[in-house]
Image 1 (cartoon, one colour):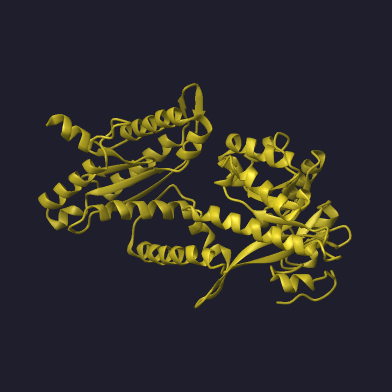
Image 2 (cartoon, rainbow, N blue to C red; image 1 turned 135 degrees about the vertical axis):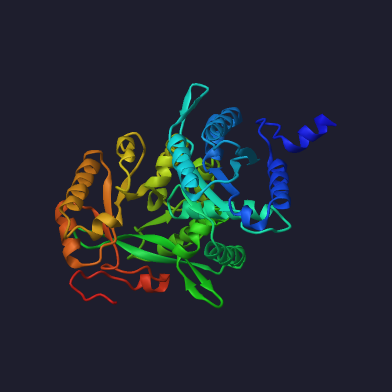
Length: 439
C-alpha cells in the first residue's frame, strides 16, 4: 500500500513530489482553513524555459540531471515549512503558508538571485532560463488545479513582459482568454490560408535601388480586419503554431520569388523570412528549407533567413550546426535586432552570418543621442571588418537615412522608404529619396 501511495504522489524520474501531491495539499488547505486565512497560502510556479533545448543539445540524461539540480536549488531557498513538487517535466510548484507580502517578496528576491547562477552537471556549465508566476488562494473553489493554472498564466506574462516573476490578477486572466481565443482562430486561419505576406522594401543606401524585401505575415481576420504580427506571433511562439507559420511563410515567399523571376525589376531581389528559436534547434529544418528551394528552382542566395539576437544567444551551441548547414547551402543568414545584447559580438566571427540588422532603438535615437551614433558606427565598422553587411531598420526620416549612409551602412529599411505593403503594391514600388512619403 505504501509503495502504491508513493507511486501516486512521487515523480519517478526525479524523486520530487508530483502534481498529485500538490493538488492533494491544496485540497487539504481549502478544507482546513477559513476563507480569510487562504489568502496567506501562495502557489508559485517556476518554469524552466530551455529544458527542451538542453535535452536536444546534450541528451536526456543531462537534461534530467540539470532539472533535478534546479529543483534542489529551489528547495534550498524556500521558506521554512514550504512544499516543493515537480508538477510537469520543466515546472516546479511551491506552496507556502503564512507569508506576509514582505516575506513573499524577500523569498522571490532570494530565489531569483540563486537561480541566475549556472548549473554544472556532467562536466557542462548550463544556464537554465526560467520565469516565475504566483498567486494566492484567496477563495474556496472545488478544483484546486485552478490555482496551478493561474500561477502558470502569470509565468507566461512574466515571459511576455521580459521579467523574472509576475503575480496573477483578473486582468491577466481576461487577456489570456482573449489570447487563447485568438490562438484557436489562428490555427484555422493557417489551414484556410487567411494569412497573407506583406513585403517591406530594402534599399541599397549608396544608390537608393531596391535590392530586397522582408516578408511579414498579416492575418486577414473575418471580423477584426488586418491583424499585424505583433498581436499574434508572440502567442504562436508559446505553442507549436510558430513552426507552422514559419513553414507557411517560407512556402509563400518562395512561390512569390518564382513569380518575380519573370519580373525584370525584381528578379534579383533577396527575400527575407523570419524564423523562430524552435527552428534553430530543429535538425530537420535545413532539409525543409532546401526542399522548398529545389521545389521552386530558386537561387538559394536570394533567400535570407532572419533570426533575432536574443534567440541566437539562447541557443548558440545548438544553433551553430543548423546555421552552418544552411550557410553551406548558400542561404543568406541575418541577425535581427543586433545591439540589444553584447554577448553576440564574440560570436560574429564564429558563425556564418552574412548580415546584421541594427536594432531600431539605436536608429530611432541616432539624431539626438551621441551614444547611439557611436554604437551604430562601431557595429558597422566591426561588421565590415568581418565581411558582414549591415542593414538599418526603423528609418523614419531623411536625416537619419543620410546619416546612416554617411556612416557606411549598406542597406536601409523603414517607413521613410516604405511601410510593408501587399505584393501588388510592392510590384509598383520605386524609391525616390526626395519624394514625400505617405503618412
